Structures are given as structure tokens and as C-alpha cells.
Image 1 (tube, rainbow, N blue to C red):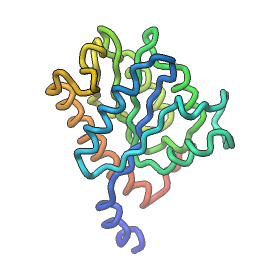
Image 2 (cartoon, rainbow, N blue to C red):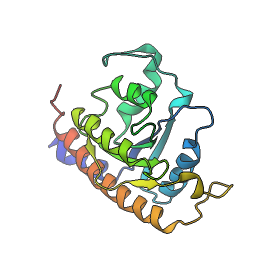
Image 3 (cartoon, rainbow, N blue to C red):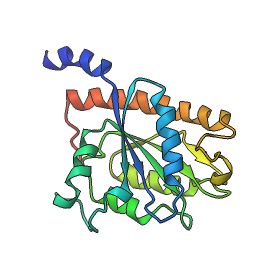
Length: 200
């Protein structure tokens, strides 16, 4: 009875989406991509966006997930999220080390939640980084979205004010990814409310 009476409230509540900016390099292009995505996603009205820039949260280097006081602020925000969007570049055919560290620092916070990707880079558009992240998140019992947004030759896609020069393709891809993320986010949120996810 408790679960059925609570489900209408869950279904109507905005989906809480943590948006992680994965690069912390000096001169990085990530904030431009993140700012565009936040503006684009905010137009939907059914999402509660929580931007987490890893450059603002220098997390400890760890070898296993555990409570780490230095990471408490990020840990709480990841735990509160219903879904995630990861903004990542491609560095040497992979994703940034600080992003991997942030992922490895946590475990249950990712479980039974959906993850979408927005990637950027050169000719490859960051897609090789995304494919490696899919393997990592699968191990953490997260569900990655089939569709993603990728910016090939990223710097050529944006005007000086951060707007898109050719918005049709990335906005179409963004809508598809967010539609999937919203469906999975609401479905998995209801599932976690009905029965805690049991993998450890």
C-alpha cells in the first residue's frame, strides 16, 4: 500500500539529473559544452539539473569506493540524483583520469540509474571515450543510454558566445538522449522506491 500511494508523487516529480563536467585541464573546452547542454536541457521543464564541475571539486585519489570526507559534497549530490549526464572529452582514445577517479570513488550512488553522454573532441567527437565509459558504468550496475551527443571538431561547432553554429544535429541528438534518460530515470526511480537495488 505504501509503494502504490507514493508512486504518483514520484512520477510527477522532476527528474534530478547530475551533470558532470569531466575535464579539469587548464584551457579545457568542457565548460562551453556543459553550458550549452544545461541551457538546452533546461528547456524541457521536467528535469532538475545539478551541474557538478570536477574542476571545482578536487577529489582524493582512491583505489576503492568508501566514505571519504573530502568528497562528501559530491557524494551526497550523486546519491540524490535520479540520473546522470557525463560531459567528456577524448584524451588519447579514452576519458580523463579525474573523471575515472570520481567514478571509482563511488559505487552505490551509480547503481540502477541511467547515464547519458555528451562528448567532444577532434574527428572522433569523443565517441571512443564514451564507449569506454559504457564498460565502466556497466560494472557499476548503471544503465547507459544508447543515443549520445557528440561534437566532432568541437571548437568549430560553437560561436564566441557559446551558441551552436549548426544546432539541428546536436539538438536532435540531445532530445533523443534526454527522452531515453527520462524514461529510464523515471522507471528506475520507481523501481528503487518499490524495492532497494540489491547488488553489492
